[in-house]
Image 1: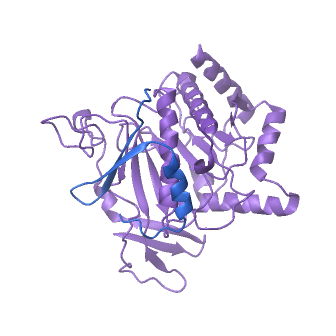
Image 2: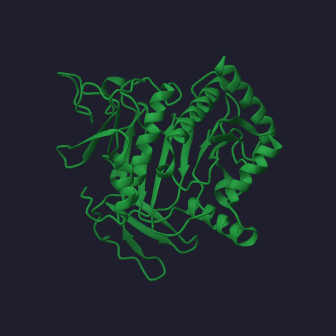
Length: 43
Length: 328
């Protein structure tokens, strides 16, 4: 999924300032998959 | 095929996604598509041997980003529209037997972060008007996969229930001023009989007007429209409150209680929802006793009127005891 058509860049930016590390990959059939990791934070 | 059809008699959209008939249905654990892909093993949806939290596009989506114009043209009375939107799966853990209730509080805190991130990302898409975070848990609810996971739907419209809730909040605001949900919370705090847990930033209670015997709402104390606006302390308290409630549910009947978990937040259609949208989480467990389920039957489905077999004050007392018991 492409994300060019956003209506609120500020909202997206605010969530990117902090939070988990995200690794976005594309599956063979084109679907995205996002791996969230939280470095230095054990459960 | 993803298609919307307008119901002019109820003034709401119905979504059609015929490919979902073929979705994976209760596979044996060794073929769970949400488990990690072990070296040399069954290739699952997640091509790693371990993971924390994973989000991916649903293989059998109710809505898709590039939905075509429907083959069925509809009419002026009952138009159709593309089923455009996003459907994501959120996998909570790489442990197949885990549940949200069983996750460590710190993992739930991370999950809150992921939910907030999904709200922000999907809500920023032009065609997504409402981001709905939810979980269906248990076969009694109709889950097709047992691995601990929830879902996020990015709807191309504001769904009927949140829309009705927002209208009630708007009407209340115009008549009385202030936020309907803040006043509901104030009333619950003042009376106290249905309050289950009062954290620093969130309160869990059985609402005065609960439609299921063990329905619980978890309200942010601050009038905040969405998870994206929660502070770090609020996110921590939400995780703590959810953990306590879910452990209480499982202690109530001494088994892992099925439920629907639904998060209500501000629509993302660029409207002004100040003093109208108040972030909260709703739980609807179908059990009315350990052995009996509450079915949505004639009055509920045909007339839209819920008939409830137990008073919220009574069930809140039992649930409060279960939460305390689970903490010992």
